Every structure is written in structure tokens, then in C-alpha cells.
Length: 287
Ligand code: NDP
Image 1 (cartoon, helix red, strand yellow):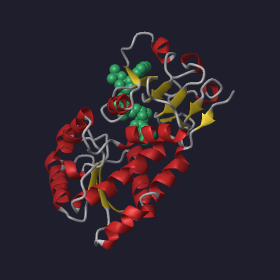
Image 2 (cartoon, protein in one colour; image 1 turned 30 degrees about the horizontal axis):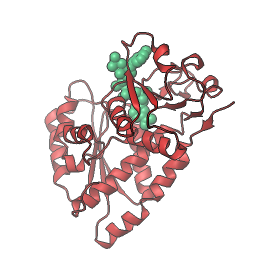
Image 3 (tube, rainbow, N blue to C red; image 1 turned 45 degrees about the vertical axis):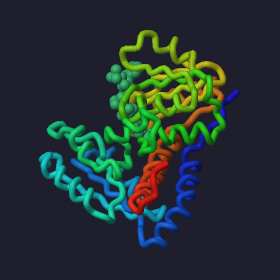
């Protein structure tokens, strides 16, 4: 039986519409949420991501600005920009689009972003808050995955969740969020022995690798919920996820498409975080 499709595009539109009341309350206090994106170099994918985020901001009533730098920018120039944005009261959220060119220390740049404006949730203070279960900014992709699961009504407590990929921006924070919901969580990576044997145990399987169609139907338990975070550009120019969608949809109970699944949710959660950062700036604590 074909899987139920989890439509990230329509859920993302709903999540953004939910921000309307908060944005109006802020406007009544003379505050318009503002997001500043820092973009370095000419990576086409990074450009598309920043453009999509700026467009979503504008459609939602969030002010956006983009600070562009050439590939060869010095770290000190970038840090100066981040310091300026930290001090700018019209900017509530700052995102540094990754990856940064090799000559720059991404960890140092991310650490320079004020934790109160760290709407990507990559600062150690926010990742630490997530680890300890305290309020903070949670990275958009794992937060978006959780909203998708919740919206689809996928049971989590007591279920086996397997995440393929252990990055700090997707796999690890998602593992913590799933643990908070009482799932039993396994994280796989490039050194995992017999990946298929592990993924076949999953009631919830999340692929966040960056390897087109890595997850085939023989790796998925019948009825499982399969969430595809991967974005891969194929030789013919089309996009594919990490999951072999056509095959897996015949086995899974739920599945997210690429595009139109996790991607739009990542952007929506960034906007939610920017609105929360604007509220924080006028004294409303994070919850
Ligand atoms: P990283 O490259 O940081 O991490 C990839 C992970 O996959 C690593 O942990 C790596 O293991 C693991 N891995 C690589 N090959 C294999 C393999 N054969 N078997 C099992 N594990 C493997 O990627 P990101 O987390 O940043 O992104 C992952 C994917 O998600 C990419 O396609 C990216 O474009 C996409 N993405 C999508 C977003 C969205 O909004 N939809 C947002 C962010 C990312 P090891 O640690 O051992 O190297």
C-alpha cells in the first residue's frame, strides 16, 4: 500500500500563517522582526537558500537583509559584520549561510553571533540548552522534522527512531528532540556496520546524509515513517533526496518528498525563530 505523503510545503505555509498574530502584537509595540543573512562567496546552492529565506521573510512580514561578501573575505571583516548585526536593534535574527570557504573558521564565526539572535540555533549556548532541555533556539531543520512528525500524527513514544547522519545541524539535534519525545534513538554514520540491518529496525527513519537514493526499499520496515532531509542535485539537474522515493513509498507508512518536504519546513522554522527573537528583544522569555 502506498505511503501517506507528508506535505511539507503546505505545513510550512500554515506555520508561517500562524506567526501573523505574534507579528501584529510586535507591530503594536513598534517592532518588526528582522532577519540578517550573511552570505560569503558564489556557491549557487547557498545563493538559492538565502534567496528562498529572504522571500519567505518578505511574504510573512519579517524584514530581511542580506550581507554579501566575496569568497576571499577575511575572517576579521566577517566578524566585524557579525558584531555590527549583534548591536543593530532592527536585526533580531542573524544567520550565517554555511558552508563558509575553507580559509574561514566557521566555528569562530558562529560563536560570534549573539545567542539571543542565533535563530539558526548553531551557537554552543543554544545547542547546550537543547542538550539540557532548556528553552533556546533549536536549528530549523530538526525543528521542522519534529513539526512534520507531529502534524502527521506519527507516534514517537517508545518507538525506534533511526537517524542516518550525525551532523551538528541535523542528525545530533534531531536525536535530542526525538529523545525528548521518548523515542528510542539510534544515530548511524559513515562507519556504521550494516546500515540496512539498523534502518530496518526503524519505526521512524530519518535520512540526513547527502547521498542520492541511499535508502532503498530493502532498508525500510513496512509501515515506517520515512523522513528525507537530503538534497542532492542529479546529473540531469533535478533534485533528489537520500531516499529512493519511488520504491520506498510502496513500503513505508508515511514519507516526505524532496522537494516539498523538509526544505520548506526549515525555512518556516527559521521565521518562527526570528519572530521569537524579536519577542525576546522586548522581554518575552523563550519557552
Ligand atoms: P554532513 O555532510 O554534515 O553530514 C552527513 C552525515 O552523513 C555524516 O554524519 C556522515 O557520516 C553521514 N554519511 C555519509 N555517508 C554515509 C553513508 N554511506 N552511510 C551512512 N552515513 C553516511 O551533512 P548535513 O547534515 O549538513 O546535510 C545532510 C543532507 O541534508 C545534505 O544533503 C544536505 O543538503 C541536506 N540538508 C537539507 C536541509 C533541508 O532544509 N532540507 C538542511 C540541511 C541539510 P560521518 O559523520 O561518519 O562522516
